[in-house]
Length: 217
Image (cartoon, rainbow, N blue to C red; front, top):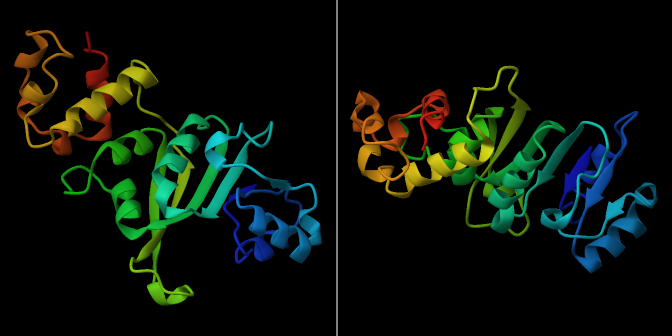
């Protein structure tokens, strides 16, 4: 298990008590690293003193990612987890509420977008609960939400990760346009005549995008 951004150890003190866990924590802040080492002797040699965005996978076997993710880089953390999707067996994280809702959103929702589709192609997403501002000292100006990602037992077939990502990002770049207009450079004129291209990106399911990826030029 790897914890992202343990800070003052609010979560860490409980995670360290879990039996039989090979645990590591990733913290970039010098003062917090010193505090953690002094406060939790069990963390000796278990702290990776770097940015989570810069590290290689912390284990050679499947692992779980947990954390109260720093909100300014939470989406980047999510994409890092996607890069490690073959090794991450579970991820549980706290995000700003709007970001958590976006990740968990389904087609037809106003907040359904690139992050929703790219994450849900590989993971089942469950929005677990809200976290009030009053749970923090000092209270932030935003609400928070905790979500859990579990690898899909059956991933949709896609042409390739790169093609799929490019299609989804292009489709949502101009989300008010129909797919025919937003993605006209990615498909042949013949393919663009299909009924599905009358829809906007937010109306397509993850499986719709996956199937379309095979028709890309």
